[in-house]
Length: 330
Image 1 (cartoon, rainbow, N blue to C red):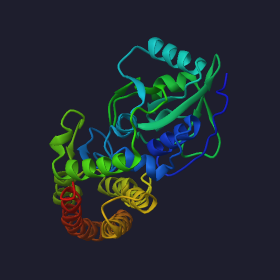
Image 2: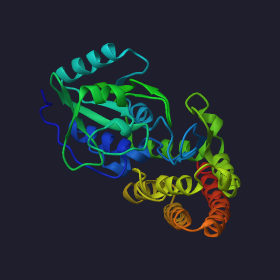
Image 3: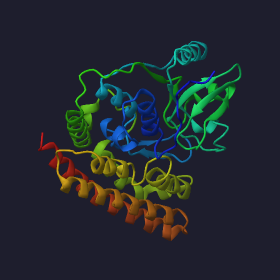
């Protein structure tokens, strides 16, 4: 079976694209940057890995998709840790009831990706199934993707990067409750600023690693030490990818936040929009430095890591000043 009325469209980031496609399906009417902004999607998490590339960071919080549902005021169900049979049976039931289901997967086991790198969580929407395959709406591809259930079972449980066990989220009542768009824009943006300055505000949802502005500064402080890691060139290349590729929307997700500010009539003023745009460009420049360093000899790698560290300290200062401006406008 395949859901009737679901239109797949690719985009820039797996989570916000999935939310945008749900918005189209349920008639909420939000584009991708607006979904991202309403979800307080901007963040920062830096953490160690037990295997190559040994270090990773995300420019968004782990709970973006859940936060969007809560901001919108729709009823949803989120589960993790159930046995495969239980979780898959629930997904089938939701699909039969006409509901797309958000699945959080490791791309390593997605056959159609063809990658030997673990990367999770990657958010996709299940929109159909048969006895042997699940039909997925994946932001990275222009058409729906068919995945064998055996591969789904492997991708749905992940130990590398961010450990997960059969996590899914599904909207059970798509009618927003007491939703006011202008107020939601203000609250979501204010929450982003406050949680970046004081990430402990999100203490019940942070997960592993260091978070917010302290995490950016921790990354900057550690970058020059990456030369001692087993494969510093690959670690540095992966860092570049976490700035500019791997579904970030450009500039470590700051590009999506910039576009959100440009699309909505927010109350924080054009100066905030312009400063966010400049910060996104600064992150893109850091990505370029990391990319070039990853391709250089040992001296070039060392110099590039030191240069990127210096730039990140400056970015952290600029982000802090911007978030303090937003926080002061409550």
